View 1: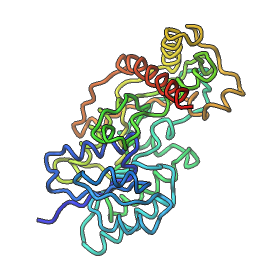
View 2 (view 1 turned 90 degrees about the horizontal axis):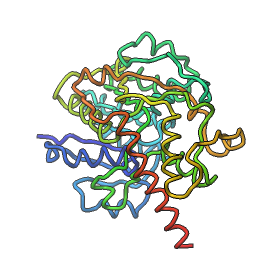
View 3 (view 1 turned 60 degrees about the vertical axis):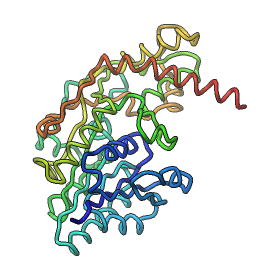
View 4 (view 1 turned 135 degrees about the vertical axis):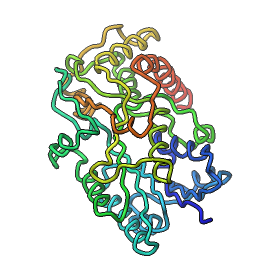
Length: 345
């Protein structure tokens, strides 16, 4: 029996490394031939003991991407979701795979997240009543093509509708939780997300926890372990375990609850204060600070419901209180990292 050839990009990142570790635990691992794209020979060497083939390269190597994709039954893309040439290169390889083998390969693409797709201009000053469901295709289709990162998502979805590839796009909300995976233990995976660590490190830099506007904007959220579970549900469906939606139907929102950003800012300020950094009440970021520390997305609303995701059997477990509780460990980790940097300098 021929192996299932899997290409994973972003394989040592926060999401990609967590997905990689889940593949390494998969009950059908012996049937897989996993190729992991990594950026350096050092990381490739650290992965040498795993049942996977590391290949050194990046999204700038479009010829390499096309070649690797042309040899793959499944591509799980967890690197730069906004890289249009890279997406085109992967699709070109999958089209070649379809043409040469008469099979239909799978692309599971990581979108920028619900905040990238659904962003507004709230600047933290209001909560939007607009909520998007991944089952409401008409409403999703109404999003303008000028929306951030929309061009990549639409190109991939259109390829799925053409029929030479089955495409699934995972759009997570705010992803949280410190990853504790096999790759983290090997020292090759980034164990942390972006948003909450950025908020914490901004507070440490200005010596005071902050808040964007009134802190009223709302984001959907998902724990990293639950998000990986969604990838695995889609992957299992793709290799024959269940129903799979593709193309314009193949958008999957990863979320399990929502939270006003002000709640996150207040907990961060409280935890920083408890460790001797600033007042317990967050102060509003100035315009200059906003430009220094954040993108406009941080003050936006991005409310979503992962109903299609749940329809394929995904059952996330972590909710809003888990998100808020996770901030304590994030603050401790950020402050520990700062202390190590001071010591080394």
